[in-house]
Length: 84
Image (cartoon, rainbow, N blue to C red; front, side):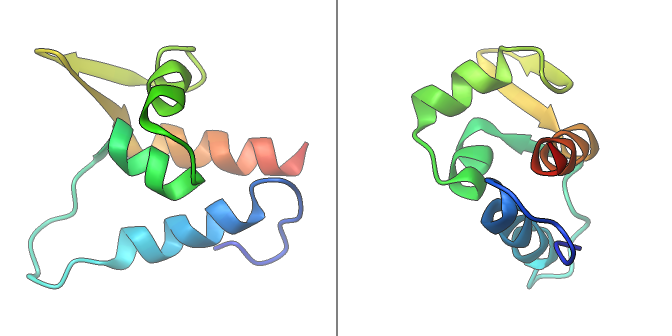
């Protein structure tokens, strides 16, 4: 997944591949990330992840006071950012 990509988010892309595949219980994978998930993937703080989620860079959905980030939209954004 991360092979062939160079740039500032190269490590984050390889983390996404690891993060996605971690499902030990065999339950269906979530189609969304939380701010905590993207903070862990990108190696940034929760506040920065929250600001990034609210920036409109990728699709989000608000459920109560939680923001859920579309997994596909985030991963597409991450790949596009790495290519620049």
